[in-house]
Length: 289
Length: 173
Image (cartoon, rainbow over all chains, first blue to last red; front, side, top):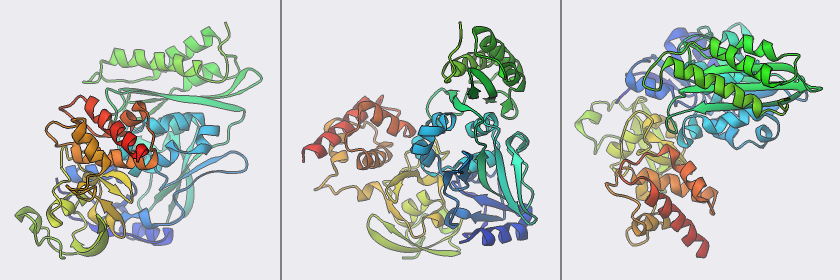
């Protein structure tokens, strides 16, 4: 399959990339890892006039922690970097557990987290992770830099909140307010398939109680879904069999699954509840009897 | 060489030579002119006549088109040829020679790691990259590493054995 014709630029600096995007607006697409964009180009679902390949732009490959614990992931940080990251393994359990579940190992060598967020596929895993962490996307454009909360970043399937001329340079997960634990659970028919259901669970705890809870769902709606009622049901409380069950049911209620070849709507809803229970059982806070 | 000189009619049609790139393929420096939309897999197969790189699903699923980009496996159907500018590519043709097989190739032969052979180039390149990074993989490591390469014949058993055979041989030598 051949993409339709496009012009190709490989800028060597972020300024150059931004200038190209400002100049070409809606007609330009940013190419980072290309693991979603190139298939779209081949299917001709996307046919931009200009591809701005940012792979040669320095300073975007990082994943680093600020002094206060804020995690920053650059636009060229690839899934494999996160999968092999000692920083994530030591201090960011939800992200560390999600990284090896993204696509397949070969795709992870090229694909990027920020690119995956920008793609806004409702079956994308990273958006749920960032939602559960209360993260945001940093964009740079003609009017400077702005942050877009993850909860406002995907406007619909395959539609992000970036304005013409803007480029997403970083994804940010804020510093946890207590001890952070969490996990990502994904049901897939085989490696590399999209999630039948994915659930991200992030807990911040102090003194035996939940300070902040993040629960987000993949593949069960027109976008990744924050299960806010389930999150609220946990905050300020210890984990007990009752609170866990309440959160599991509220998360299942928040899902908007459609039946398809991967499973019926009822099945997917059931998996959401099961994954919330399992996810909470795997956090640092012990479930009290 | 100029890209397209050995190409099929389908690919010659795209010969507008918009960009000149230079890349190293199997240790040999190539300077080619490519249209930006040309995929790396097509450059290798049609432009450079390296037909060991197979196109299977053409949708980033099967891994038959896997090549090594600076030593790491990538799906060459999901990368533009222009993006290989300045990079080093290894295809199955660069893995070994008939008289001097790579241990991975020997392993696939000895352990019958293939039936139809279509997925084999990608399987072997992914395996080569695994062994370079982890010379002593467990069976689980091998299965995990190969989970982006699909085989419809073997049920994977002999492929896994082949890779472990190669690891073992390299440890002994």
